[in-house]
Image (cartoon, rainbow, N blue to C red; front, side):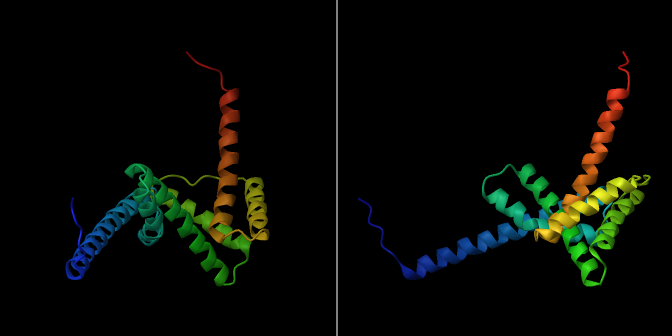
Length: 179
């Protein structure tokens, strides 16, 4: 039979070594994730400061998912998505803090997406006025139920994305199938 005897000095040293190893691992994973998030965000047209913010803000979810056993690519993808969402929410809050009304703040965030397209050498998407009005109504609805700013922005952007997808699907249905 093995008798485990506690040795306070060696137990403390072992605990310190494990903690140092975990801290090093978390720091390394965080650095690598942020570098990937920055590269991916810049490839999507984000500016460097916005890409850095998205990377930093997505790190917590990335680490949480990774340590819960998620596949690394899933953790990276979800972390980057969450970071971008939170970064847009922070930009929205900044707009509001500078005295802009909720609609102007959302329109400025929508304008960032135009900047993203231009950085990639693309024409920005022409968003019809009725889609913008619908998105602003969604943002207002989210604010009325005290959803956080990042969820307000995300809901407004998703409303526009749904309309764009529906328009594309409608156009595809009208196109004849060619063999």
